[in-house]
Length: 333
Image 1 (spheres, rainbow, N blue to C red):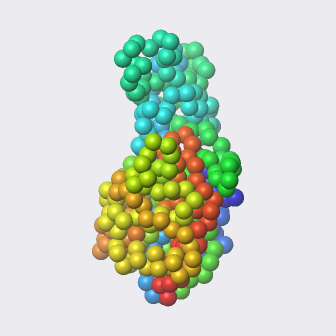
Image 2 (cartoon, rainbow, N blue to C red):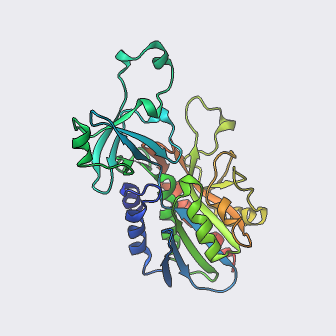
Image 3 (cartoon, rainbow, N blue to C red):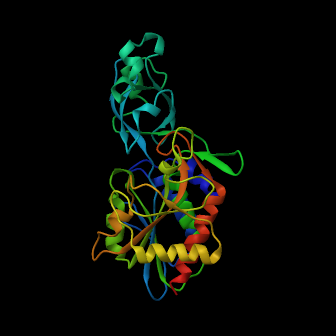
């Protein structure tokens, strides 16, 4: 499964090289042109007639950046993208291109004060430990500005589920790759963008270059079908099909395009759900405000435990997202 290769690759914000090479090699036989712009976005073009359609996913994942080296050899670090400090202690990470293993350390509960036990750990209270004993020794292996990514390996488990890091948005990248393998009549562009996790930066550049009529962002999105969350607060649920968004922090999605996606699903018998939350944002916010603008929508693969060391998604949701996007693009003939 190509999704496995994508999730296991390292691609933190502004360091998407490994992911980019995998995608370029996978799509080269299915498109007419592949361009990599100065930002590092991949823009793949399948020439056609009619509407200019841009399908979008982002290559980067939430990660960490090394900001300091302590005298004892441990390191200070900060988040690249939205990673809640509650989930970081005791996680294993890989640092830099050489994937040096490290552990995110926190003072053990036995040594914590009452206040510390009752509150969440902050980034300042944690460190990354690579097993060295001094600042000088650490400097031989790591430098300031190096990145660190979660070390989780992709695996299948349960009934048709997968667990992995970076399903946001390697799931979207894998969907676009599958969609590109088919022929369409419209003028189709697939943009695999950089730096979404820090403000959709790559998408502003690619959308300005493409100037699409329609833009479809494909995301791994929040999923909350778990104990302690009332049903009406569950943004999406695993196994119920791709999620079609209503609005989010950066976009109110075009009703014409959204209805077209829903009609394509219903006509083809593809299960789908509406994303019952308006939190977060994605590249659609950049696409519809670049150049002359575009009509935008978002189709998402629901993912539990998003922006953490390990997320969970359904293989059937992934496959149905691929089929839905194909059907919608064909409907534009």
